[in-house]
Image (cartoon, rainbow, N blue to C red; front, top):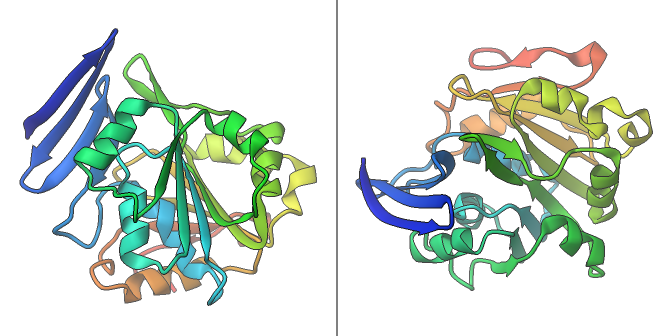
Length: 255
């Protein structure tokens, strides 16, 4: 894999690496984004951040907010596969925004990119709610990815407050234990915010993706919609219903 571009700012090293047309963004060695314009799947965990939107009732997915743009992979995939009206991306790191525009092809027509702290921006936000919020807020520590904003009651309440009545919230966690310990799963007062909760994982990654819907949703329905999407039938995603009585896996070959 070739280094297409490199920049050092202070003690931080940014790299865009290429393998053919594939683009990858690394910040201090941490893998932040990947996009493959020649393939249906972006590859890696980034597909799991937008695929739960396939569950949204027809006509309800209009306004989308992506918190943590990175290189813009999720924005590119949403514009490729979903018919949304507006898409806003909030990113603290200005270098990441530069990379998203220059190397990942995120244009103003695709999304409004805002350089801001996601917590402060959302606390100050006074516009209409979003139908889909994707929380992919990550930084780096000792060469490892870490969540930039803890999934505590304060943050989760703020996300819920800005989500529409039929909305969908997707959150990225470093591991399944972090998802289980998040306020949206462990904090009883927030459990009634959503009708359904799902967990998505890939075999090659420790990350766990939480999908929280304000409409009834089943793991098997999401699996079938992913299978029906051209180029995604071989995606080895495992999907669980997060509920004690429904804690079962729905993976390849299981319906």
